[in-house]
Structures are given as structure tokens and as C-alpha cells.
Image (cartoon, rainbow, N blue to C red; front, side):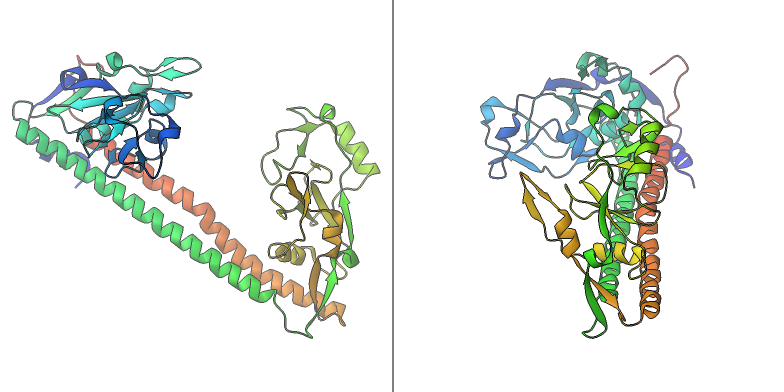
Length: 419
């Protein structure tokens, strides 16, 4: 049985009246609650308006923050109040609502308090969230956006069985129960998938460490400086970059991410010809910021910030690049202090010791390295498939939840009403 037919059965032919919110509730404003007054040692629970974006969903069962702000300086919640943020730098943040299940909580400034009568606050908060587009049409402002009580008060709310308050609240409560069930199932799936991902990563790390750990006599430890030379691209001046262009220029902040700077093809061709440039398969390493992050160069035309992004020029006669890539993940870099940030200097790289299996037989050594790489590639692919699949699966479940929520709020609506 679909949720739509379930709603029809729940209504059982009962009338549905669309009522303006200002007929169902009174509106109050929270009072100033500076962030510096929020403390884990506080004596009373509180809600800062920003937490309505970041911490809370349609129903607030547990308040997470505390304050020592005096009660006589504050507005306190009542159970069943619906809370909405009234200002934000983006309009979309205002199209949310949370029903608090606890009285006596201090409510901060920029919180619109909808004190309900004749409507279940949990039902109302879910309905508001389900009507984001209509809420966004009420938002005013350009730099900072605002939502006002006089506007939200015009929102039409479907009230089933308006002449039978007890039955009306029972229907509203049942709709909330179904939505809560979907929310719980989505949260459970998310937790299970996250736990699976964490387990796979731990398993991958364990086998990687085992595969790259050798008994004495099986390997010879060679310094990276014996394997190849440390290289970096030619310095690019800020004046030589632009926000748009032909060749992506990766700085330490965009390394492994999307570029935000570009250089001309003419400059790229000149520098690539005259100065060091990585070969396909060589492993680029971050030498500042997050030390030791790695990216395997795929050959796509791009340029990299000098000194902050480096690589070992490696002919792969002794060590495979992919073997280096995996070893870098467990390497203990000798990090020096450079000013206020940590930096990996060329000397640190040259002195890094790498285990080379079967050193007396280069051919056998490369075969062994390839075997290790192949196994780690399989584990890496499995972990990445879960990592990529997790947000997709969560998004799918969220869309499924929103679909059924839409059905549960698909009350018959007179043609004369446009909400």
C-alpha cells in the first residue's frame, strides 16, 4: 500500500481545511545569545540560531549547547514550539524549521519562535521543510537575507478534521510517526555504511602495512636520494596566473583538488621544455601544508607550484613509482619547522629510507614490487568504491524519504487556494 493511499485511508473522507499559520500560532523572537556565552559548563540548555542550520532537523529531542546567561535576559522555549532562523547570508538556510520537545531552553536572537495551538509542532516543522520553495519566496534581502513573522504567518497549513481537534492531532501525529520512521531508517543505513567504510579502511591499512613490512635480510633499505633526484617545476609568479586560462596551475591549497589558477599555453610550453616536468606515473608530493599528500601524475597538461609540490625523478630500474606511492602513505617524514608552518625540505626527501625487496636481483625485486602493488590496488579500489558509493546511497535514501514526505503532505487542496 502506497503512502498516498495510506493518507487517504487515514483521512477516511474527512475534511481538510487550509488555515493561515497566523491563525494557528503566535510569534515571538529570541533574545541575543552571543557565541562567547555558550559554554559546556553552563547551567541551562540553549540554542543559538546558527545551530538550526548545522545541528538540528525537524524535531529537537536533545539540545546540545549550554549557557550561563540569566533567565531574565532570555526567552525560554515551550514544548511544541517551532523554531526558524530569521537571517542568513544565503537564502536557502532560512527554509528550515525545528520543533523543540523541551521547555525552558534559552532561545537566542535571530530565532523566530512559532508557538503553536491546535497544530502539532512536529507536523508543522515537517510541513515547512517540505515547502522550501514557498518559504524561499518570502525571504527578503540581498547581502543578508531575512524571514519575517508577518510573511511566514501567511503560509497556509493543511489541517485535517478541523472540527474534531482530537482526531486532527491524531492524524498529524501519525504522519509525524511515519516520517520519523523513514528518518530513523535513513540514519541507520548511513551509520551502517559509514561503519563498513571505516572497517574497510582499517582492513586496507592493516594489509598495506603488512605488505610493506619485511623481515630482516629480505630487503635493503635505500635512501630516496639513491633512487632518483628531487624535482620541482619552475617558479610561477602571481602576475603570470589568471582565474581562467588554458593550463591549470596547482598550488598547495588546490593540490589534488580543482584548480583556481591558470597559466598560458605559451608559458607552459616554454617552461616544460626548459625546466623539470614530471613524467606520467611519477608521484607528486606535497611539501607544505598537509605534508606527504600524494598524487600520481596522469600526464594531463598542468603545472605545479615550485617547492610546495615536488617529485622524485625515477626511471623505475630500482623501484616502481606505484610502489613508492603506497610506501609514501606510511612514510614517517622527517619534518622541519619552516617559519610558522611545517615543511618537507629536499634533504628530508633524499634521506627517506625505502625498503627494496630482493636487492641482489633487480628483476625479481620489480616482480615482487608489482605483486605488492597489484594487491594494494585491489584493496584501494574496494575502499574507493565504498567511499564513492556511500554519498550516492545516502542521497538516494534522502530522495526516497522526500518522495514519501511529499505524498504524506499531498492533502486535497481547493483550487481557489494558492499557497
